Length: 255
Image (tube, rainbow, N blue to C red; front, side, top):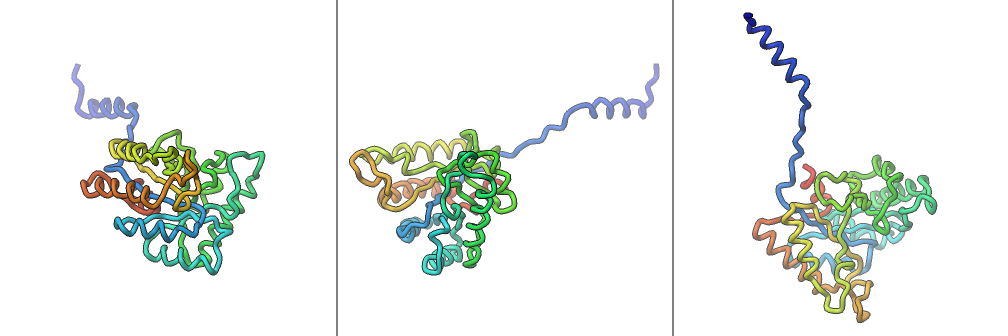
């Protein structure tokens, strides 16, 4: 039996139309690191000066009940240097239990804190949930207010499969909890992120930390922070990773 070329073409198209189209998700080219310091502390200027020593920039997540005409100019000057300023809510309520806080209150915290930061001429793109975790039913409230958010809904993943409003961070204080101020655990986590090409955002609070170790001393001091940044600097120089403010880190990692 003779099959005409046109008929062969139809058969070929029909058979291929039934095959699913597979979308390739591009992986990150390298690990990206960022640091966020929470709450608006009087030691934030010390944090910045330590980062200046290494040519890096930190980011700051502000609890806006502490933001006023006296404190705002410092953060406005930081923003003008390219440092990311994030919202950390207005009154710092826990958002991890829908029986303790309702959607209306969460939305008010999200909107009010953003508006207060912006009222001082400070751009804000990111949000950090107080006490790390936001209940999934509140996540949709972030959509109209923020480009990205740390809500700890990430299933222990630190890659581009994680939605930008379900990100998690890695606490430097919670990982320096013994009397010898072990930096090794953080260094090991940095190495893991480099191997896996992860987005790893580390965070802290005051400097020195108000979280105390086994001997009642601050878990993280300025010199501890220097040790972490010195290690990261060596990795940046070797071309193994980059260190960016949180806005740029998200932009770079998800591009």
